[in-house]
Amino acid sequence: MLGDILAWLADHPGAFETAASRHLALSITALIAAMALALPLALVLVRWHHAAGSVIAAVNVLRTIPSLALLAAILPLLGTGFLPSVIALTLYGLPAILINTHTALREVDPDVVEAGLGQGMTPRQVMRRIRIPLGLPVIFAGIRTAAVQIVSAATLAAFIGGGGLGELITAGMGTLNIAELVLGGLAVAALAMATELFFAGLEWSVRRSTGLAA
Amino acid sequence: MERAAVDRVGGMIRLENVSKTFPGATRPAVDRLDLDVPDGTTCVLIGPSGCGKTTTMRIVNRLIEPSSGRIVVEGQDVTRADAVELRRRIGYVIQQVGLFPHMTIAQNVATVPQLLGWPGPRIASRVEEMLSLVGLEPAQFLDRYPRHLSGGQRQRVGVARALAADPPVMLMDEPFGAVDPIVRAGLQAELLGILRRLAKTVIFVTHDIDEAIRMGDLVAIMKDGRLVQCARPEALLSAPKDAFVADFVGADRALKRLTLTTAGEAAAPTSAGPGAPVVSAATSLRDVLSLLLACGADAAAVVGVSGTPVGAVSLATIRERAAARTS
Image (cartoon, rainbow over all chains, first blue to last red; front, side, top):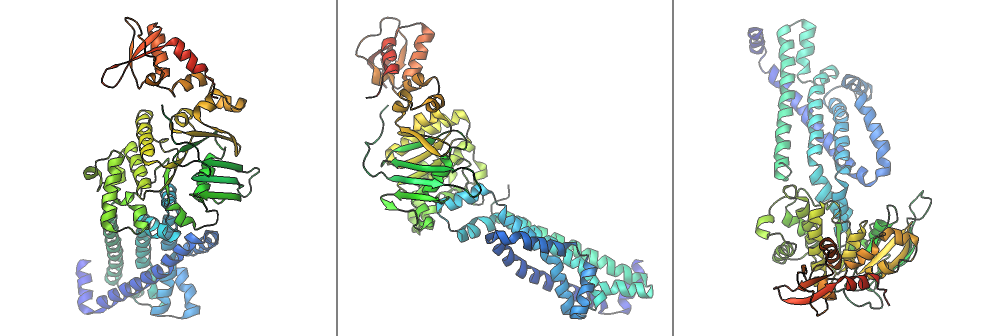
């Protein structure tokens, strides 16, 4: 098998690199977009907590839609290619970040929040000095989850012409080229694991620097 | 035991006809409450669960907004003033302490001075001063985190944090509730000393009548949101207003009254006789009584700090004191 894979790589110079870099581009863009939307929204929902219930419920619905279905649904609306794939992936990763962030900020120890308010902090100061620093580990966990979900789901971008490592899998399936298929599969798996490890490391260093580690 | 400042007109903290009804509640949590706390005194709010004592306290710094009534602090009507600015002038201590776990002890204590924009060096020296005041060696504690401290130490930091900006008023909600009983007695004594020295005006909430009698210059008993009786501990113990108060202070209130006087204060310049037990002048009359009963003696010899004889306390004296009515 390994020999077949190496042979395929030799026969298709640059194909793997193109697919891999496209996969990363899709993932990174979608993750940044998901963070840019979800983080501020979560902050707003903490303040306007009467709206939070319905927004979170709506977002939860997004979570139940399988990634492929989400991508397929985008197709008639936005067509094929890079941008529609990014949009679909953003929607896919958004719930994890939004829900984790909102929960993290709301469920900070109420005694600590009360002490902060009692000392004379404004709600904004409570957010900046108490909720966010204490919520950071859970917020990070949400970003990490979303990152891994996006990296995995980006495999399916191949189905709507978005490119990425999924193309190796679909092409391999189509032409019954097992080497190509396995290469694609292994690459996605490796990328997902690397993403997980990267964010785990980041989370660990954030914990250490905020003095919350033991 | 000497009690604090004389009453003055227009106390440091005044609640005028304050009421609070929470949405959906069947009765007010606080019902037309009038409270006047003189400068430099500690007023203890006490009562059964749900009586409104904590709600009342939190109305003073507007963590809970009253439904009606006036709040006057330092002579100013603060009912509709800027709540955030008000809270920076009021020290706030809660049972669970609520230290910021992601900040060092030094940063915790520096909270209000920082919010007020004090210059760095002034904050640093104030933090050290406060830690020393509460009995925590600054060098040892400045850079530690709350999770490394014991419950008693954490509450000391909580008090230091509340005192840091030198507020004239303090609110304390069962500050020693989460601390074990042995440590609690020591903390009560230390806090009493600190509050006296600094002449703070304090509202102190507790459910423990012994703590109330020990800590309070005034004790305000509440029930169902209403103030039932507000008086000095001796007055409360010798003349409870009704059956509820009598019940609340306890059937042993005569004995409790004896904790308010020391052997030194009650001693007559006589001799207790040969073989009499010896007590220090700081011993409460209640403990003297206990000792006399245990020894089967009629009087105890009282000695001062350095062992100098002060006089004697007899059972007759104790009986007199326990029965005394306030004028």
